[in-house]
Image 1 (cartoon, rainbow, N blue to C red):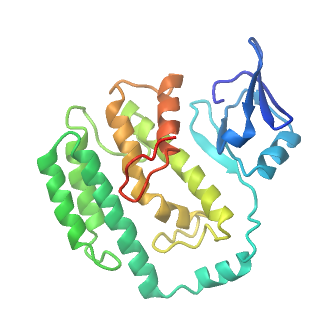
Image 2: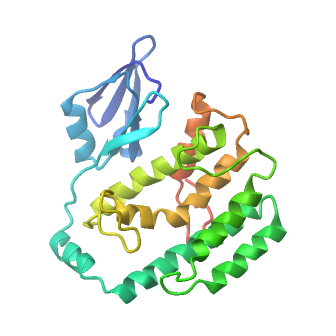
Amino acid sequence: MTTLVGRVTTRRGQLLVQPQDGAEVAVPVADVALVLFGQKVALGGGVVHYLAQHDVSALMCDWRGVPLAGFHAWSDHTRVGARQIAQANLTKPRQKNAWLQLIKAKILGQAATLALVDELSADYLLDLASQVRSGDPNNLEAAAARWYWRYLFADRTFSREQDGSDNTNAMLNYGYGILRGLGIRAAAGAGLTPALGVFHSNRSNPFNLVEDLIEPFRPIVDACVLGLPADGSLEHPAIKQALVATATTSVDGSGLSMGA
């Protein structure tokens, strides 16, 4: 709904999307996990309450459709206090081991994505993944990233930048933003404290744990962007739809899509 000009209301288990110029569309709330609202959508507190009741997260987007903020239901997990205490008391060795698992999974995912365009270069990442140790003391994550971005978009004039405004960086950042929103929803729903990460520890970031947990899923977004036109723009709804669909795809332990 980032391009919607109109209202959103609710009625009997449905979100009612009411364009200013167009027919009303009813969407079953049971089919929704995440909603993106643009700047020209009008909605009331009742809609926010309804979404929270049904465990649906919402992200508020800027004029480009890029998420800037969000709201999520508070956890009703029965052991939320116990979980947060255990999370805060997690020992350093366990934190380092968790980071090992996350980074190894991320590099393996990068290898699978890179293999779509360059199997020989992907083999190097497989070798790096096998060398990751607890806590990643040799920073193989960074080494893998340098190799990965060098070859993934070799057919484009591209340099990976978190604040890059070119089309490829913009599509990547949009997809990562969706992942981050889903990660916040999952962490809160599990009764965890999003600010307490196992590796990320930025004092000004309230979502360090989420930054940790989404690392292995970033290559899924990268693979999607790889398949989109190099001149693809977030101004085209189909581009956003593809990225949202990818970020919300269920996968199994092998990283393969489980389908609908």
